[in-house]
Length: 86
Image (cartoon, rainbow, N blue to C red):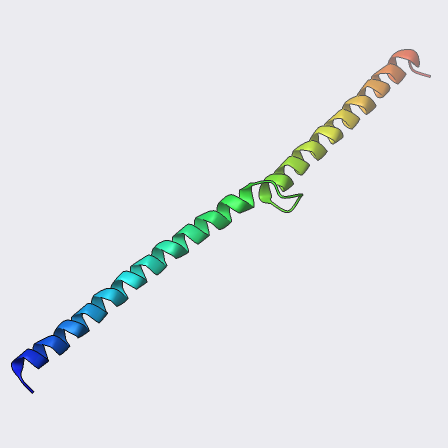
């Protein structure tokens, strides 16, 4: 084997190593993009299956409960006012 052949083989190996590192770096970037996309998707409304939809449903339910409690409170006050002690 001549020196030129050995250097060509080493150069080819170095090229393959550099390509492998580049591909690994691109794969890592791709994985981060996919994770971010998954998080963004989870926060966007999708017919009741996202976190944002669950938060909105909880807020609406809390508002309805608050309105019902207020209505019961008004009825109780009205009852106390209109039926003083027996």
